[in-house]
Length: 485
Image 1: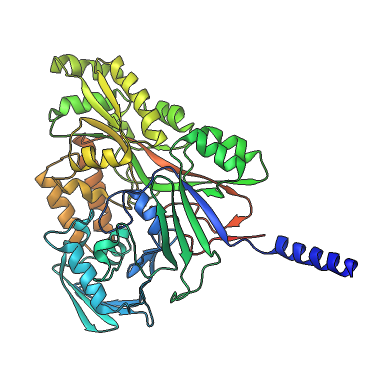
Image 2 (image 1 turned 180 degrees about the vertical axis):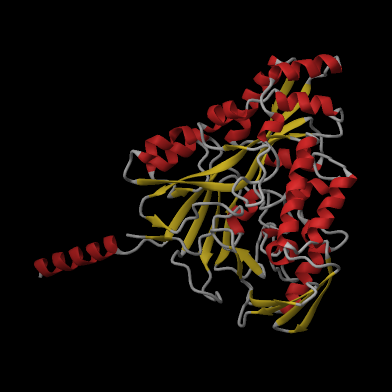
């Protein structure tokens, strides 16, 4: 009897050891200010909920392709102004209510409403009407052709929400995705659980925890101790060699949509000579090496180098401290500039380097380190700053320069007209030429100082598969993630 019991115990123990793990803990440096992607600008929101909790009519795949999501198919009229979306059958929200065409109408009308708080309201500007043809069909009519509508609807800002839960999604998100919201312990973690009623293939993971660790040293320690299973955007690139040398881990290096800029308040820095002096004072490679330990690609405009329409304009504001000093002398007295830095390491480390480079040409700065919520309130919303450093991780978002009320307050009628023309141009070659003109325009106007394209440097347990290598949008999509043993 004793031998049988021992054997049984051994068999059970062996089976348990071989059972595939179904929970995961994901590390993130920034905690989202809320969990509603339609009501906040922070990338950290989408990093938790995009494709996991909320879904749109379309979605981005890991390679940046626009894929079907809640819409199984769509057709576009010959003149490009009418898009008809066929919705999937049997989709329900996490509270059990049915998702149908009326919810799509509600969501898109809410996003484009005059009083909308959607951070990317411009995505919906060309929509003239949204109509529910029947419960499974939605017709979107545009004021002018827009070949990018499918792309626009793939953003996290365009997810479909229900009227019954829209107002409480910030703290209790209710979507249609493969994971449901379980808990948010503010300052620590967000927990998700697999949705048993999901319309699509069930994810391999049963539970997911997003753990917020702002300090790079603490992030390193948590990974080494096994407290974190994966840190897709690891904040301490200087330690990646340690992980590469350890067979327990895999290091995942890819590209992002993150144009990292020294943002300039064009209202307080209205003299283009000052913006030029700041740009010429900056040694981009020194920032990449010093703040990012070599990870990053220099840029000269707000456009990703991997985009086929990219123009290399880095020479337009090449490092030239003598030219910067001459411009400062020409201006005369330059007041001390307020450099407001959010928490990411690229901002804090990069800010110290930039402050030193500006000092070398006669421009003094006063650094203020802000927590993420403070940065959003003071800089992004309040526009109360002179300089800041931030990475814009939204895909193909040069259109933000056509918004005079955006935080860097660039107001140029020619650029706005150019972006309007791009929005109505369907010819590929003509559109490409216009996008190149747009890149050159903001470079010539020295709207911001363009630093580098943020690399995606991730660390994960070597037994995890399915994490995105690149980041075509700000997301930690867990739908295809699993443990290999």
